[in-house]
Length: 192
Image (cartoon, rainbow, N blue to C red; front, top):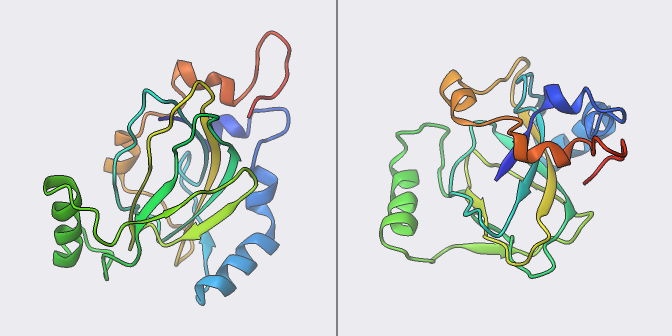
C-alpha cells in the first residue's frame, strides 16, 4: 500500500480530509459511538492520511497504536477485494505483550486459521470506525486495475496522542508512486 501523510495533505489546494478531521462534530460523534472521550491524534503524518491499495499489494495484518481509527472509503477496485478484515476486540489491552493478542496473531499468520475473522465490504462513501489497537485487522488484497482509495483518521484517549518513533519510522510516507493521491501535476486536478 502507498500512504500520503497529513503534512502532504495539508499542502494540497483542497487540504484533502483535513476539514473533516478538524470538525468537532466528527470527533464528538465518534466519542459517543466509542462511549469515551476521543482526541485527535497529533501525529505529523499518521493522524490523517490517504492510502492506495493496488492488486500488487498484500496489506499486512496488524494492530494499530492509535486506540481508535476511522476510515472513509473513497474508491473500490472494479475487480473486487479490499474488504476490511478484522478480529474484533482480539487484544484486551494496548500492550504489545498481551497474550491473547499473540494467540490471534499466531492463529492467523502462522497457522493460517480464519476463525473469528469478520469481513466488511465497504462501498465508496462508507465511514468505518473501530478500535484498531484492540482489533487485529487488514485490508484484503484487491483485484483489477483500479486501486482502493481511502482516508484514515486516528484518535487517542488523551490529548497529544502520537505514534511511537518505531511506528513512524516503519511507515513509508509519500512515496513517489503515491503522488496521484495528492494531485495530478499536469492538470492540477485532485485525484482520489
